[in-house]
Image (cartoon, rainbow, N blue to C red; front, side):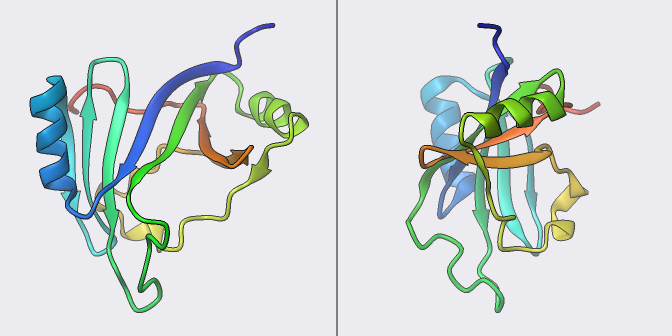
Length: 140
């Protein structure tokens, strides 16, 4: 069976993403790619040169007073695929269903960068599909 894609992204939610990112940098030697603090979220992106790791905290807003009703921790993983439409079709045939969009206004992201293109769920596990992938280097 041909592999659909490569896991290239993991998202972790944390109360303090800046402190959590520092812990992962110290413990695992990860490199920081970027960080942001917008009206929407505080976020830090780390890498081992192969995998993009997002440490994020969506901010509480009037519209989203509790963005983490289930607590913090591992949120989802992301798969970089060659053909987004074929990958989505294959995942749906296996039973994957669309995830609702995040309960926030994504246009407020600092840098306005969205890496995911499709958000799905299968067997209770959330994952993203992306045809363009996730950053693993600092932008120049």
